[in-house]
Length: 168
Image 1 (cartoon, rainbow, N blue to C red):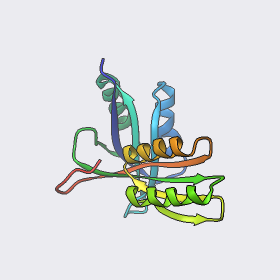
Image 2: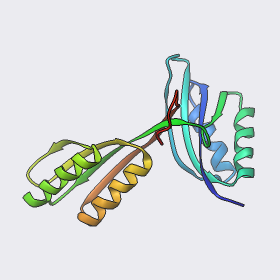
Image 3: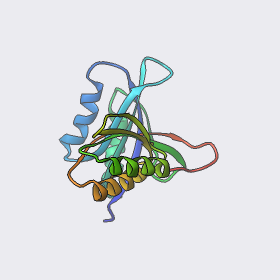
């Protein structure tokens, strides 16, 4: 069976314990989530979860069926094969920088369209709002350029259906 990265968006009732129950559906069946992000929508009584997981088609269909059976779930949207806009927030701290390192980091910021949001003479904090793949590329470059001098915080992706184009 082919394992594939899959994305779903779930609209749920914005109530205490819903996040725990939904994530519990996954852990109870030993499904591993790659990322999970949740926030309220334009309607304060509804939250939207964006979930990424790697699974085969059969397992993914089971996941969707289980989610649809949950009473707190209003709607499940499979984003796997449709045009979407998706971004992930990532913060990266680079430590023990020389002046030359700082120059290189600011050069990387320009190429990757990343913001340096805080710094002192030896440390810089970067903010990246990119696709997951682009953030992976940035981590790879920074890890090679500044080994063992990084702290990374990733927030998980949020996604919305595209109107006319795809940007994953």
